[in-house]
Image (cartoon, rainbow, N blue to C red; front, top):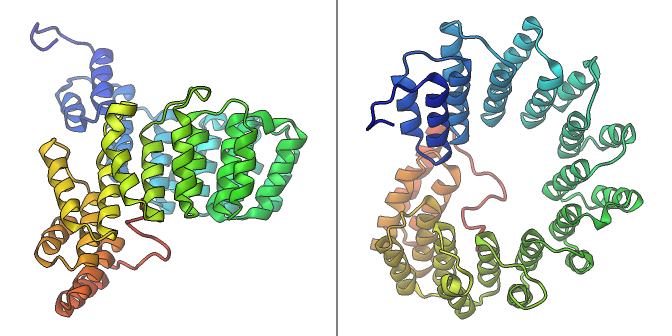
Length: 423
């Protein structure tokens, strides 16, 4: 279109913006926007969505402020996107202001009701979400109810969740969102009650519900129950297999995870593993010390399953090798990755730092730590990991410097978090 000099209209240029954004070319998307002579509300909304798609919530809010300055018409879609941005950065005050704007402008609460409930739930104000729900005079559809149920379970407001559920016929979305919240909270008792609801209303034959059920039981420590549900699924999807493999891995049953992975490709299952399945089985190998098996799976991924290992897979295997004392193999794998044009992510550098920490590889460990801190300067977990490395080589001056830096930035270690969960 550029070569032919075609004079593109606003609709076409907006579509080009959206295309660039969806393919990861945010800079090109913004460039198209800046070069447009006329921009309508759809164009502005597309820019907001582009920033949100790339996790840049503050920039999305900046676009919204520019829309207000330019007196651009605000639509329901605009407000929904802005509420998502506020939820993403936990900006309660700004989200509350958007709520006020919704009321003042008299916007359609059928559309915005769910967005408001999601926002308040995500920022931890479930009581506000319940107020929104109770004040809605419009018809409350399943989407709206499902959103509130998920929020209530997430924040352990079980009585309210079951009260909302009692006013409707349960559906697969409501059950899966509630069960997912139980998984996150490790709430076995509530998860079992929701399982009973699924049984009563005949959802136990729903593969999606069963996938979340087996994941919930696994995260609550009931691995045998997870396997029982998995065996009972008539139409197993790749998600079913991946969830069960991941469950075995988390519980240290690497041999079982490996066995199940091999069963996937056998005649009868007709389900091929995807990149997440490969990551789950590699992680299982890491948890169980199956170094040789993990390497063989990684090396045969493309030939056997048509899977090209990504940075996540490389970081997982690097961590496996590092824990096994094979530091030279870990660095060889890293250099092989770089030669293939795969850029190292923070997870890859973190795996290398941890490997160097375990094997007292000083010079290369400092090299990896430097790159890691450059990529994630404001990440508390990264600072803790790098501090651990320097402590292992008795560089207490650097440890103290890192701790002071954390204090200045207001960073605190989140309990139970780790950059090496993949292995």
